[in-house]
Length: 261
Image (cartoon, rainbow, N blue to C red; front, side, top):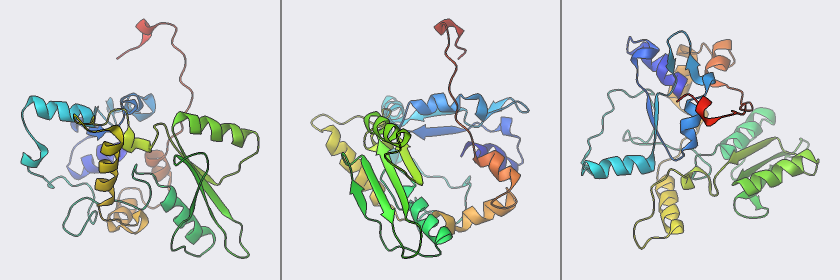
């Protein structure tokens, strides 16, 4: 989203990347660290892809301080980046998959269509240790089975990584989220109200997420338009530069005083 806003959207507005201040609202404090990575910094314009990250919990506190509720705030679509998205009434849109925004289900369906030239009506997930550790397999006669898995929470992540290293598990795709139940249960999320449990709040979040109309991402008109107009196609050098990144180990800092904020 950062490169989309700072490159595509900025150009649409006749602005350079450094003239756009990009704020995102996230369920996770680690997104602040991710936004500060040098990989997402433009030396040419001396600006980051994302200038400021605010958690949902911080947004709630800001609204409370100003004595404002979201219901009182008018929506504004004047700066909508993507056309053809969301529900028919112009509202939010979602995709098939977990309530934390994971793309495993879409990736599997897309892989089946592109690799096997087929389709599946529904995916059957197999729960392994718990609900946050599941796998799904699609078998088509005469074709190589496709096998994918999701692992949410560090305990499950450690488990699946160790088993893959030892050759006990083999997957075509693995979806990882650091928090149990995924980003819907992120550390920066709004806290439960008095008398409400964490599970009750999480269930409300999931229900709200599921209430949004689902659209298949690769069939959204806006996506196709952007790939052609902005990136010159799907598999282009610019597409790889703008949409792909490589994560690497962070060098240990000898002293906290060496950290530059």
